[in-house]
Image 1 (cartoon, one colour):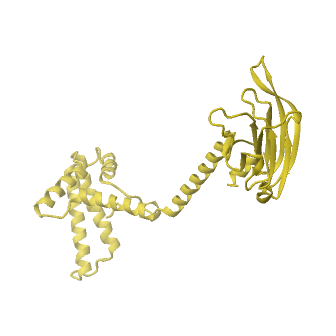
Image 2 (image 1 turned 120 degrees about the vertical axis):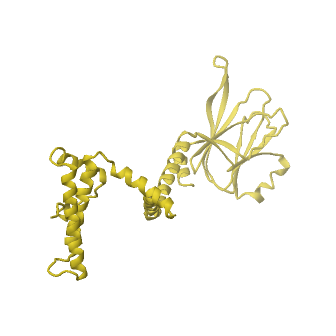
Length: 304
């Protein structure tokens, strides 16, 4: 008679240790090993009877696999029960016995190796079944967002940058005529009309438009020990590409008295103080360190 029956929905994987714990609770004081052995022999006889029916050696015996399964379950039940009341660890014993048999009969691997191989295959299958395209896509998205955030932070805290979109160059009076060849239009500003200017400079944009150019006079403040902006002297608006501003002034060797400020169409703000270069006399500039407006920072975010 079978003792193992349950709904298929309730079936779970069962280990020897779990079964032994259950049978120890069941047979703790109710059965002796002799009684269990007698039941085991009976169940072995019932299995033999079912097998005879399956082979056709005995008539009138139910020969279904379901009957055979139930009788085999009974054999397992009483075998494990005998081991349990004798305090035998079947799991440990099975591993040790199998290891010796694998050595004796030269098996390719023992039970322990087989189980480890299954786990290895399961891990490999899990790795192979991962949707790597999805993970790579998310990784690239994270990197893209991180890069964008880093650019925003950099541009936000970067208030000044060198840009080569203007040119300041000192020229001689004999070069004035050639300006009409190189530029479509020439604006002109003379500083301090009362004195004859000895220096002449041209200021022009390169591949950018300048919205406004303003000239300011400077005074030295002895209290703060710095130059302060005094009065606005002149304003030039819409200095387009291929136009220039011709500036007549004197470049002092001591205290500067003139400053020029401008704003480009891309949002850069620059300023230049006119004074003599005592090192080598060169006052030409082709790259300028600009202060960036909010407009310029927004354009920089989009690579413009």
